[in-house]
Amino acid sequence: MDLFSAIETRTSCREFLPDAIDKPTIEKILAAGVRAPSPLNAQPWQFIVITAQAKKQDIFAEAERCRAWAIEQSGWTWLGKYKTDFLLQAPILVAVVGDPKKSGMDMFQKDGPVGYQLACAAAIQNMMLAAHALDLGSLFFTLFEKSHIRRILDISDEKTPVALVCIGKPKEPQDPVPRKAVEAKTVYLD
Image (cartoon, rainbow, N blue to C red; front, side, top):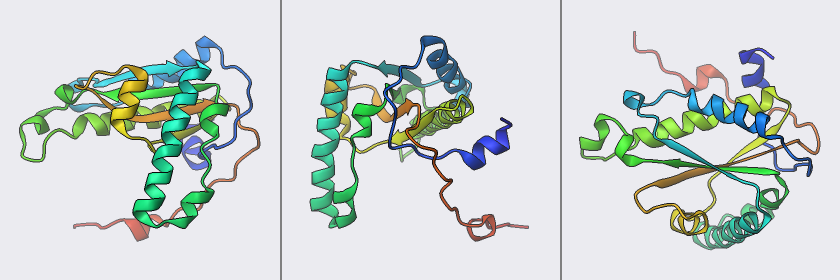
């Protein structure tokens, strides 16, 4: 699959088959993540590969707690229909953890470090495209409280759990989600 086809056809997967993913495939996906750009080539990411059902159950419980809180805070009733069962279904969850001390020059700016989070997001995108090229589904997941995920995964307070990437064989093929036209999202300053 060429890059542009992968970009155009990749979708978020929320229903996975229980089929195991072998270690060479996981490592190929992680290697794609490592190739992402980062400020000063600091490579601020760490990947925690989660296959233990007990850890997935803890993460699922946190997601459900956070979902209930989000409904209460936002009033978004549609969130009540949003299921997080895929956290238990996906054979692999990858926690992408960032190091704010590896953020680049923005560490010294008033707004603080964000470059490390953007680099982690680039790594996530690479991993999701790699998974798609390998006929696997994936999902970029952030519905959790960072402090709770730190505790569940034994992550130090100095590091930030940026997202979880759910990876597995999709239960059913997914149609690409419509996107706005490039012209609607672009401004040229000539």
